[in-house]
Image 1 (tube, rainbow, N blue to C red):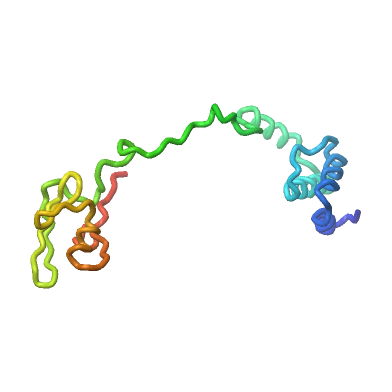
Image 2: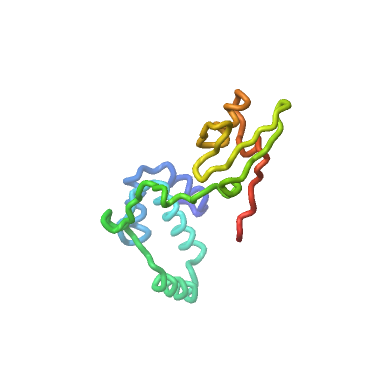
Length: 163
């Protein structure tokens, strides 16, 4: 191989996975744990550069070893039995109400096409002219005959969330 690392890396990219595993074993003195081509190319390129330019200093090696001892390293995924199970979202997991909505019992008032609209905010939904609606958007569609964002139609802005 040539002395130019760039040319060597280009040559590595032309190799098969089997050839890369052989080259890895030559450079590291042990077989690779991974067969992923790109990973092997990167590790071999790093090792070739380290051999040519100089490896980590002894101080850097000690620091890396200390960090590795202190860290919680996992080389394999935990068994399926140890993984947390995802559960379906229940109503208890969701926030009780949208923060943009006023308190139940509040009347939302808006002038639209010469009429004054009054919508009562309920604990679950909205009431308009004796009819119950599950969302402001469905209510607004009923009033206007077209799709509108209900919060926008009634001027309910995003309320600040506490930090």
